[in-house]
Length: 212
Ligand code: URA
Image (cartoon, rainbow, N blue to C red; front, side, top):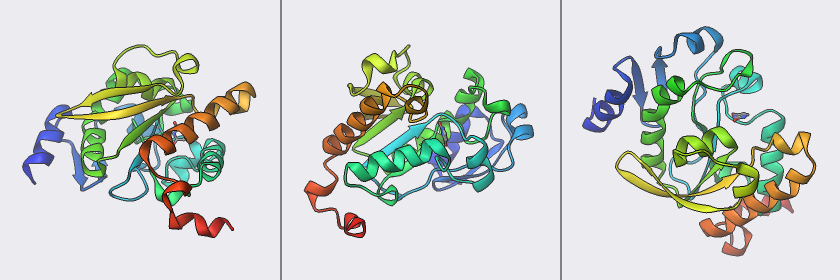
């Protein structure tokens, strides 16, 4: 095990194993070990300018082993496409990698148990910009209470471990399903984030050719 891995695991115990970006095995959260069918690691390039941070896997994600593959995921995909990007161009991950029972919010202990993995993923991916999707990831990264609807689109500096990152607060894509007015906020925030990260169509993204 490298020093970096030892340091990361030191945060939450030695019962997790992480190969590069992936957590292979972890039993730190007894309830989540019961409720998950698998650990859902982040997807996307190992180095990416944009990293989207969600809360925790839901039923679809737990079944397919990939973040944001249900209805929230298709809204995120639509917003990325509108902004000139494909899903494969960005990194997508969650604060917590195992599905909580009945889709409840992760507890502060579960968030803390998984934080070392997120810290390592962010350090390796080294994004220009992190987009926090909803209240739980925004508050987890900003370490304060966040009114996501009011603060959506705000750019903030956040610290995780030894590193600082630029982040943009966003409403969760699922919020657009319950409140139509949030759809505009969400799509605008994603377009703003793509712009800030310096990626997208105007930067000659080859990945967009498939859209035509
Ligand atoms: N919501 C999240 O926060 N994360 C997912 O992976 C899916 C839905």
